[in-house]
Amino acid sequence: MIFDTDIFIWAQRGNRKAARLIDRCENRYLSIQSYMELLQAANSKAQHKHVKDFISDFGFMVLPLSENIGHRALIYVEEYALSANMRVGDAIIAATAVEHNLPVVSSNAKHFKAVKELQLKVFKPV
Image: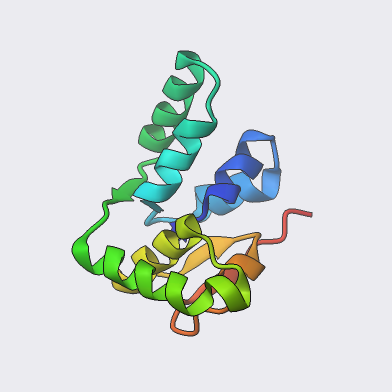
């Protein structure tokens, strides 16, 4: 399963449901896009280290960009930017999931619902 960036944020804020979701998942994946978003949101080297340690300690496999992912993300932006407000980051995460035939879990279903071939699992933090 690919975890959207928001799941990490919920877990870091102490949401037990998010922590259990991560803990119960055997095969944990992360789009390079989410990894970059988490690092970009950090305010210090200590927070960078915390993000890197979290990813490493929980055994997340970071899935890199590929030509196919980039092309698919471009198509999603072309198709859904105007009609569904698809953003580049979400397009890359969705494209990564589709290319690897993995479901994506997110509490932001509206960011992904337009992508028909995406296996979306909606997380409800409360």
